[in-house]
Length: 457
Picture 1 (cartoon, rainbow, N blue to C red):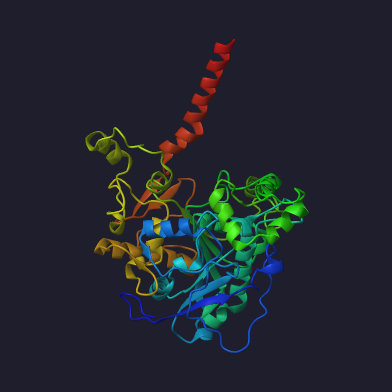
Picture 2 (picture 1 turned 30 degrees about the horizontal axis):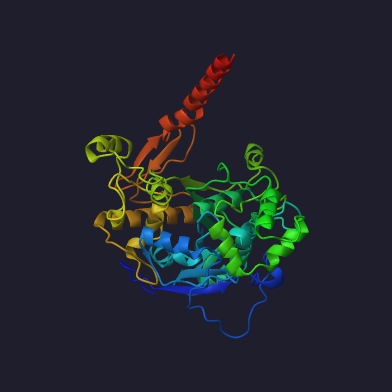
C-alpha cells in the first residue's frame, strides 16, 4: 500500500498468529507456542479482535472519529499485524516498533491502528499486537487454579514471536521498541518491571499510562472471583469450582456479564510470575529493565472523555458562556486537534489518546483506517514532528534529530518538552497541581480531621 505524502510502498501482513488459539481447554491458560501451518497463509485480512463489549468499543471509535469496517470478536484472537517498508526483507534490519493498544484492559484491538504511515515516514517495521481482555485476559483466583495476568503473558508471547520472526519482515530483533497508550502505556511500564520480558525489547515509550497507577492492582482477586461465582450461580465458591464454572461459560455470557456488571473489573494481580513483587518495591529496589524510557501525558487528559461518558445528568445546568470562558481560558489555553473541533467544546485541549493520531501519522492515512473530519497544514506538520520524535527514539534511544526542538532528558531540573503546534521546553510539569495533591490537600484533610475530633470532644 501507499501512504499520503510519500512514494514509499509499505507491505502490510495482517492477522499473523503468534500463539496457539486460546480456546477450549486453553481458555484461562497461558499462551501456548504456535504449531505453524502448511502452505501459504492469507495475510490480507484484519484478524478478529479479542472478546469484548462491542457497544462500548464501537461507541468510542465513533466518538474519536475513527472510521473502519466492523470486526468480529473471537476467543481466537492472538494475532499481530506487521507493516514494513517494501525492500529486501532479510537484508534490511530496520528498527522495530511494537504497539500495545489501550482500552482499560477490557476493549481495543491491534487493527484500530494502521502502522503503514509510521513505517513509511520513519523507515521502521511497525507491529501491532493483540492480547486477551476482560474476564478472559485477567480473571484470577489468586492461586494456581487461575494465577491471572494472561493478557500480559500474551504480550510477552507476542514479543517472543517478534524476536524469532521479525527478521523475515526486514526488522532487527536487537532493536525493538515497545510503545503503547493508556492501558497500553501501563502494559509498557509493567513489561519494564517484569523479569519475563528480559531481552525482548530495548527501548520503551509509555503514553498516558504507568504501572504505579492507583487502583491498577487487585490485591484480593479471590474475592472478585467469588462475586463472579455468586452472580453466575456457580456450584461452589472454591477456586477450582469457580474456574470450572468460568470454563463452561459461553462467549455470549461472558460479554453479557461485562455489560451487566461493569464495576466487576478484572485487573492486574501480583502473581509471583509476571509480577514478582509489588510495583513500589520493584521501583525502590531498581528491579527493572535498564532501557531508555520516554513517557508523557496530554494536557487535558479525559477532559472531554470523562464528562461525555460518565458525567451526571444536567451537570452544566446554570452555566453560561460569559461566566465560564475566563476560567476555561486560564486553565486550558491549548485547543484540540482540528478534526475534533465539531465533536468537543472549544476549551478541550489534547484529551486522552489524542496524541495517537499524530504518532501514527493519521493525517496521511490512506488504507483500511480513515479519520472523520479534516486536517490542517498545522496538523500535518505535527504528524511529521511526532513521528520523527518517536522514530528517532526507536533508532537511537533519543528522540532528538535534525530540524526538531531539542527534547532534554529528564533530570534534577525536571525538564520536559511540551509538544504542540510549537514545541517548548518547560520545567516541573504541572507543579502547582502536584503541590496541591501531595501537600495542600493532605494538609487540609488533616486539619478537617483534627477539627472534627475537637468538635466531638
